[in-house]
Length: 275
Image (tube, rainbow, N blue to C red; front, side, top):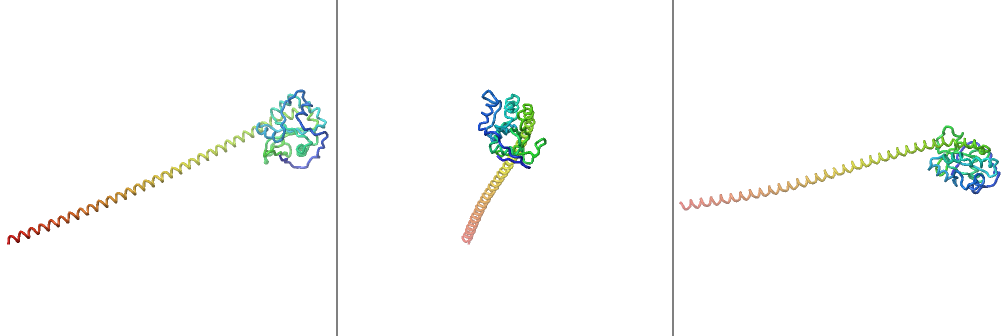
């Protein structure tokens, strides 16, 4: 993931406690008597981003330090059912340990001076500057998805139940915004799908028209070839008939000439007998 932001950097927070290798276990030990927390904690920022994207929820990151002064109050706030309900309804939660490089980078990006801290993120794009967002709109890029920081709650306020509930209650407007974005995205996708379908139908119609034109051309060519062949055959028949007729006339003329010659010879023979 990448961290996008601008401006002067806040003084780097020096962790006061020790690393927390298993946040879920740490949370159970300090907040809950039972085995299960009232909300899920995604094991990685990438998993949280993917789940939030899939479920159309806001991304909630808790940057924590085991030695922070507000831990005891925060543990009580997080164990409240209302807090759990808000987190389950509107957010996908990921916890970042300030001892980790990821936690340090997030704290620096958000200019945090006190821990622990809640930061809510909503999907966005690089050209967007939505109303009501944090000044400068710090951005967080995770797996190609861009998230914009919406609100933050830090320090002792994280241990105040009223402050935590008020902060998390803003998740409703975040989810409404995400749902509107998703509706717009679906509308764009539907429009793109309709345009693709229209282009496909137009292409198929053009191809069908082209194939029909080719078929008609083939039929015309075949018809012309048939007509040409038939005409050639007709001319051959006519030539043969004319030749036969000519031969017949010549035979008749020869026969007539022969008969006339024979007739003259008989007449001459008859005159000679008379004399």
